[in-house]
Length: 252
Image (cartoon, rainbow, N blue to C red; front, side, top):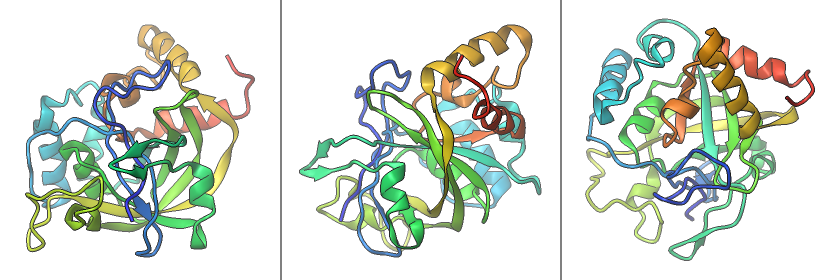
């Protein structure tokens, strides 16, 4: 079954800087689900290699400008824990007859609160999936919806492996150019950790980002604002910790 995911190009959510997002489906333990993520624009194809090479490929693919987010990029290839932000669509939207909705509540309802994060069809986002390691933390970001923002936390429980939806002709994420002996697209398994103590809206994050650009604060180069189309994004430790600290504060 196909799942929910990312948005298509041009399908931006209200007030959201993401003009396009990838789609993907999700399922738990190999059983079909629907998960939503923002659909990104495809970049140059790159093969899976070692982590260092994946990071280099990420930089080349789409001329990414991740130098502006250099701390996140430089962590690739180092033996450091990394942090992520991953987008999914919490509101119903049909794509090729399939509802691609998948919210954090849907993840929480899955068996063992675990599912695969499939449907990513952007090379740079795919490379980030391939760079993920077990137990790394990720924010679950509600995208392409009336109120986009960070809804909760999850963790990586299975490292990258081939995304089955690229071979499923009835899936919104079917890719006829991908071959089973050399698959283009990968996915990881994620597990629900907890809801945020309070929802952190995009508008609040944007306010901090703009302020930090002037002051040199933690969110000054946040990929959510410098590479808006990516549905899978790296975070620095400073960005991750700052966003967690917002839970304890009144909305700005």
